[in-house]
Image (cartoon, rainbow, N blue to C red):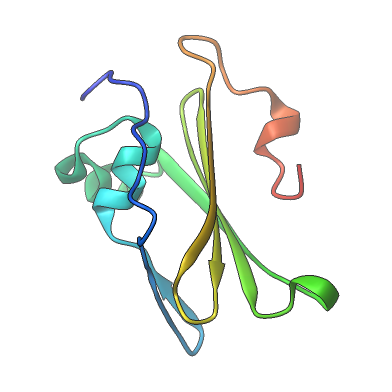
Length: 107
């Protein structure tokens, strides 16, 4: 596992949005959580990386908030229906666990 800090993503990052599924490339998740892309699938399979997807309503209609958690880190992406990433944030608490209030999807 790479203990590097999360790295910035290019502005033109997109994800695949279609029907009832949103597909995010492992590289995007890895960069946001400070991991190597090859680590992401196994960490997701074992439940070490968890996530949530929220669909925007009212003023946020047509957008989705995708949140990924790993140890003391949280990555949040705001994605339009077109797949364009319009917002990104990462929080890294280092060796301290992520505070429970930040694990809530609406926080």
